Amino acid sequence: MKRDIFKPIYSISYRFLFFLLGSMLLLSSCEKEEDGEPIKESAPPVIQGIRVPTKADSTFTKSTLGTTIVIMGDNLAGTQEVYFNGYKAPVNPAYATKQNLIIRIPDEVPTVATNPDVPNELKIVNSAGETTYEFQVLPPAPVVSSISNDWAKAGEKITLYGSYFYFVQDVVFPGKVSATEYTASPDGTTLTVTVPEGVNYNDPANAELRVETQSGLSAVNNRLKFNDRNGMMVDWDTRVTYSPFGPLNSTWGISEDMSKVTDAFQGIAPVDGKYGLVNMPILGNWSWANAKLVNLGNNDASFNGGKLFPTTPAELYDPAASLANFELRVEIAATQPVGDLLLQVWQSNSGKDFDTAVPLKDFVKSADGKWYTVAVNLGNLAADKGATKMAKYGDFTKATELRVLIQNPTAATIPTTLAIDNIRIVNINK
Image 1 (cartoon, one colour):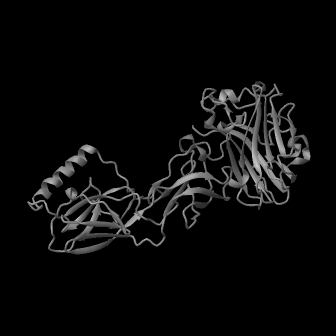
Image 2: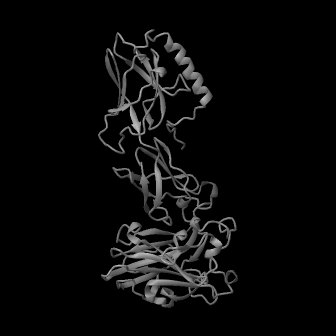
Image 3: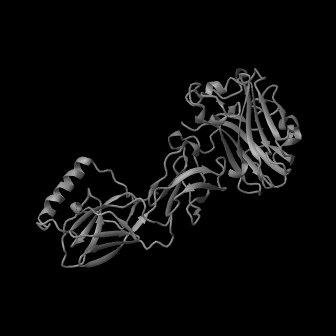
């Protein structure tokens, strides 16, 4: 069912606004004192309603930061001060007449995003007194920065991370399927959602997950595509010739030992079929162990022409595209705290070793076997102590080997039990 959503942000042509302001100036010139002194009102201001500049017959009691509004009432020509939730807004007397006052809600006005106890009050002051009016200033539209697990199935709970999750009205999944169960944190930075039935992962026009609040819709974000199988390199379930777990040739590492690939271990339910297992103490100081990494090579000419990295569809994997447009993503679940562990991506390319790493704790938020999506931007791969980077995706694909591994940069040993699945390269720009 489509909901009627209040949309407080309006597009006003400059030509119309200048016409409107010119008309108000003409009206107000009749009310200004000839000596240029501010008008002294004989009665306190009266507020009868709030509308947008372009619609004289539309009124509302809430609006977002940065919106230009018209305050309707009486005795407004001599307005001296206007306050939104106690914050003083600039008043231009040229935009005031006896019955209308045009004013912009400053971006600095406190809302529930900065103060949960805001009074939701508009106050106007003139020389004869003041008046207040119940008016709610809304925070900006929601921002979704990441999803805890973009491979979750119907009925599973996921967490959206971002900002301004206040007054949530809808959470829309691919295929325009709305969630019915969601709860926002008091500070508006997280939103827990149960994935609804019927999500259509094959609807490219509506592939992103979006949040709708009274302030508007979250922006389309390519990082928020749900269950996107493009660019899949290792899912532990697809077998090809000469490759134990494919779709590419995993030459050594976790997949070298069949016992390290499973679909059930100590409370870790599969996110999607089998997964690789890292179950060992990770020694400190960047120590090495085959059992904590996946090493991929393009030794299998029978698959994809021996090409290690995804190349199709061509519009997503353009060799000329900036490497910063691509992320290596993987799902990880842990039953012990990940602490200071890193997920490192490494490759040898053109005679140099390129690598980058992200802290697992930035993504893996619990140690209860829950799956989380970890993302590493490939544009951060660097060699020569960070001085050399690859510019294009085509530069990246020249390598013949790729490693994804768990690293411990600290001195202390970290006991580790975690699962890894769905190693893939995703274009976050399309």
